[in-house]
Image (cartoon, rainbow, N blue to C red):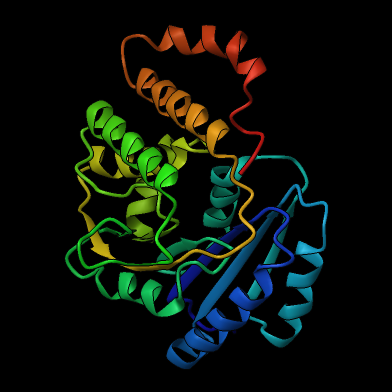
Length: 261
């Protein structure tokens, strides 16, 4: 008989063979001490053309708590997360980036803060957060502009919707799951917006975040995609839903928001 699962951690990965292995080693060693065999790590390898999936399967021989799901089609980060969430068995579900920018101790603090909340998210912009090294000014500006747009369009009074570390109660997620579907930049905003729409409690706490070399982010493209993604999402929750169909038939074919992580 399988042991009950207290915590499910989903890690989306797109061509992360150089950064995924140390992340899995670190997380497995840390949570094995805390949870024994009552946790799981679900790696969703999405449209990888390197050894990401094979490497994760090799590690699963030493860490049976690792499950590897290989999705051949490009579904974006949000799509990969939904695949992992739907497979998760834990009472608590969370996710982190494959690069290990959030250390396991910082992620576990999110779990500990779930008392009195339904979802807890990490913020790199709280006064007592630790970000090492400081992000380049262009990224900081892009982050703040995006945050302002999110506040304006969705009324989410949060400092950092995009930090890749969040945990939530499974019972709450099952309530919002039917309303989720967008991927790429809009996914985190949609997830938080749905939690708020359903009346769930969101808590944001300071975190420790370390920039890890190897990011594939194209900042100029990301800024455009971020603006388009959240504008599209806002229109979906408005009387102007028809504009989204028009966008998908025109600009959506040129700027594919699902193409990259």
